Image (tube, rainbow, N blue to C red; front, side, top):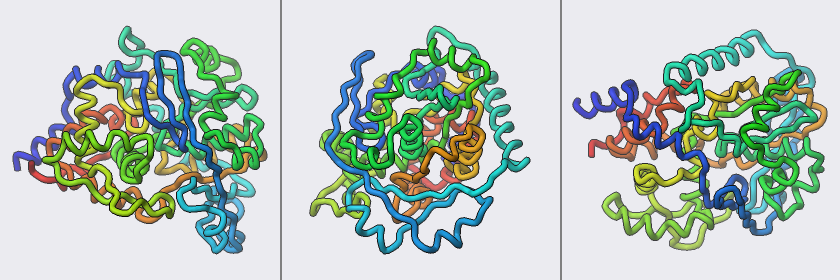
Length: 396
C-alpha cells in the first residue's frame, strides 16, 4: 500500500526543482547516434558525422491496397507482401509504401482536438512558469528544419516518426526517391546539407513572418518513446551504443543478467550475443541524469528538446493519432502532390505498446518513480497518462 501511495504522489505532486532544472538546462544533447543510422557527436557548435554505407530499401504495394485505401480516408500503409522479402534485406531500414487519400478535408473533431492540445499546452506552460524565457531556459533551435518554399517548420523529435518526416522533408528539398534510396549518406546528413541548423534568432524571425509558417512537432508518450529507443538502440545491439554495454553490465550486475539480443528488421544477431536488460538500461539513464550529464537525444524529454513553451507551434501532432494529424499537415501546407509518403523503420513483430507493458512492469518502484520525475513535464504538457504503468512494477 505504501508503494502505491508513493507512486500516486509521484505523478501528481511537484517534483524536485533540481531535477526539472537539470532537464531544462541540458539542452545541447550528445548522442552516439541519430535516427536512421546517422551517428552524430557534438563538440560545442561543431558536429562530426560518421556513417557506414548502406542503402534504404522499399516495400511495394500489394494488390490489396486498391481495396484497403478508399478515397477520402486517412493515409494508409501497405504491410508486407511476397515482394517485401526481396526488397527489404535483413538488417536494413524498413521502408513501407503509404498512400495519401484521393480527397481529404479536416473534420470538425480533428480541428477541435488540435486546438485543444494547443490550449492545454499553453495553460500548462504558464502553470509551470515555462511560458517566458529565462537565463536558464531558452529556445532550443538545434533540431529544427525550416522549409521556406513550402512554409514549413518542423522540430524533429527522434523516435517520434522522425525517419518518416526526414524522408518527406528531403523530398521537399529536391531529392528524388531514387537518390534517397541509393545514397550512402543517412537521411539526417542529407537533410542538413539543405536545411542548416538555425539559430534561435533565425527561428524566431521565420516564426514571426507573414504569412506565418505551418510549424509542428510530433510527440509520443515518453515511456513508449523510451521503450522504442531501448529496442532500437540497445536491445538490437546498435553498433554505436554497443561500446557502452560492458560498462553497463559491470556497473549494474545486481539488476540481473543481460538479455539475448534481438533481431534487427529480420536479421538475426550473432550467436550468444546479449544486450543490457531494460532495468539495467533505465538505471544507467537515471544515473546519467543524476550526475548532470547530457541526455541522449533519443530519450531526452521532448519538452526540453523542442521547447514548445517558447515556440508557438501551429500543430502539436502525436504518434498516437499520426495518420489524421499528418493528413492535416500535408494537405494544409499543400504538399500532397509533391511528397511520396513512406513509413520508415516501424517496429516489426511485437508492438511497442505490448513490449512497453512487459518492460516497464519489470522496473522497481523507485525506478518507475524516477522515470515519472524525468518525464513529468512531458506527461503534463502533452497530456499523456502513465497510470497503466503505475502499479505493475516490483516493490524493490
